[in-house]
Image (cartoon, chains in turn cyan, red):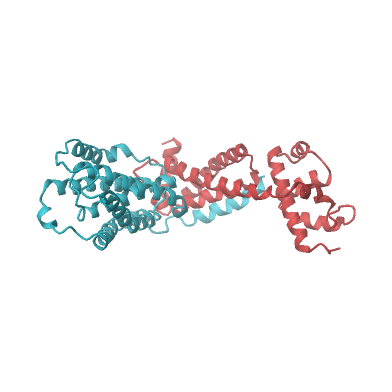
Length: 215
Length: 190
């Protein structure tokens, strides 16, 4: 089958002739991903404002611990998710999932365990859970689209995993945006239901990742 | 500086300064190593080795078009391995799909294939010859040995110098092509 290799030899000569040419793509990736993250946060906030609107007493609760708990928790989750995204678009790098998500997990767990606010786990209204999870998921959709398309500038080689990670980041951005509308100030509520909403978006990402991230 | 990692990483860095010779040497060595992996994988999966060079070329193009994404501070081999693995899995899926459509012929079609009028070597040898010569060399050899000379896949494999699985795949694939070709010509063709 040696004559089969002739085209490969020709190809190699052609590729070698391009040595030193072509712009640096790694530079592009380091711009595209942060831009997608900023866009995601803005888009998710826009969706939350349109669907739910910021809560009326937002200004008063801004400095309170219950509000800060939600914001810090979601920022930590999103930061871990962003690190995972940065890793998964580079071939041959195993994302340190536990390491990246440990700060967020510890923070949310401690908040939930020491939750003395007395807010019920199922929320202040009968529809709280559905409202919360639904709005977070809706807010995550444009974020998921932006993150997935930015990831195409990189080289993900495990597409379901990459899609799940994209969904995870999009979900946490959605959760972060929803903090301005969320009426449930119980830490346990946030830890449980926000996480479930994020998991739903991650599952969505895992299911569409293989189709959208192919190269 | 004599591990593969060091040699290849050095060549990949040299590529960025326009060193074609170093880059070409790397691509050759890398292609040889990818070829071994691809051939072993195709053999294990029971696919024909005729596809191997296509997959090798896909891997080379993937690495070449993304070569600037490699972070020189990181190891090169895991980066190359991940891309190679991805392209091999991609190719296996494609070949698997081909294999499914390949066995779409019914038992009657298999059995009746060589009694097809246009296809009868006794009645129309020139015609059959013309159809067969249009096939890729590997498939030609398989269809001549099994279809025309009546050899078993084992005998054919020994004669062609290939594996039984590869011959079977090549034979089935060529039959499918011949069927399609005879149907294009229409049943009334003399």
